[in-house]
Length: 240
Length: 273
Image 1 (tube, rainbow over the protein chains, first blue to last red):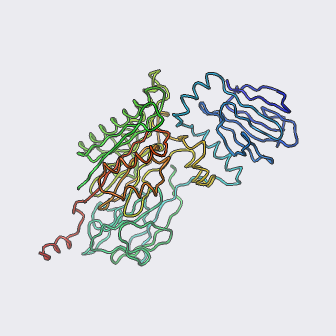
Image 2 (tube, rainbow over the protein chains, first blue to last red):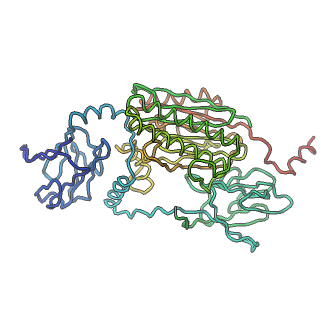
Image 3 (cartoon, each protein chain N blue to C red):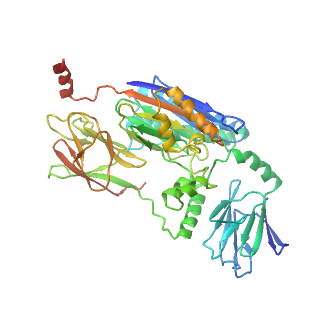
């Protein structure tokens, strides 16, 4: 079992074995490690145990948390790290088994976090920065026909939307010169992009003809042959 | 379709073994790279099993043109049928590795990342779980066709840390998803339309940890021989002291079929004679 050793003025005050999944450090009584000193915030820092890793996080403390003299927000604790909280020293030590495992694991550093722990770590960091974590709603692209055609708005639900005359197109356009596929819109990691198939029908975005692919921004206007649409994104109604 | 593909896997400067695995299937235009993890030989087993299961099942379903309800787990209605074949095969690989890791003591904790690329004349499908990556190099730009499933990428996305902090963060190898740790997995799948001269890179983090996207772009656009460029990328990562195994696969799409050209263009050729 790992241990946290509280030291003040070079004297060991108490040893705390790491018996749970986490330990909190602060001046208030409810903490696992209570440090009664004005330089320490009520709830100052926290150590989370995740698989074989111990992560120390500073919890928006007034005077900060330092590891080996460096101020940290979150830090993966190593054997023998010296943590300073206020004027107290917290010496972190792994057990012999954990030290051995760490040597193996140090190279194979990749590991998996389970979702609740992930969300926990992220929201603590967001809290520190005063950031409101978004509800992670998917934004979906929408194509709106601009010239009073009989078609309504079309949501771009597919990863790859095909636009053209073909029956299998997600957005069907007519006309003598319209090819089976005139253009495609793909939903990529960086957003929605429109790609021209390079046929006779020109594809323009905001009046500029596009050559290959072009990333779409909200309210861009798209022209494909004689058709005109507008692109924008909205929050998806999907439950997932 | 005219394609050339090459792959190279290197143990890297510090590791004792290579837990990466890759496969190049030119007859089915299916390319896969995996970065295994777990004690002793478990990582090697995980990456190999994942690659083989995906290859076998994707090709099987394509041959049979299987309907979506015959696949493993639920299909995703934002994907094409082939996209669902790939999605389903990855979910199946996850389940198999998960069960193996629970059944055998020597496989406990094993897992792997996965990146899969399938190239067809009108569609390219890119799928990933973990922090191995797929890139599209088109003209003078490089863009990801994969999402990074690790803590640091999520922190970056939420504006909690800066790019500089991300590069040195102790959490940067902490995966938020992999194959094998949980009984189900969320896979990121993207479908795009290919263009002539597109270049695709599949790689494990042994490369991207030490070589930036811009440098990768520069190296890849500075030559035409896929095999030679693989060696250059691996060499660069080794030179910079990568802490991991390094695997790269490069696929160069030289020429697409003319299937998509319209009727007018077909006639135009007759007139041009």
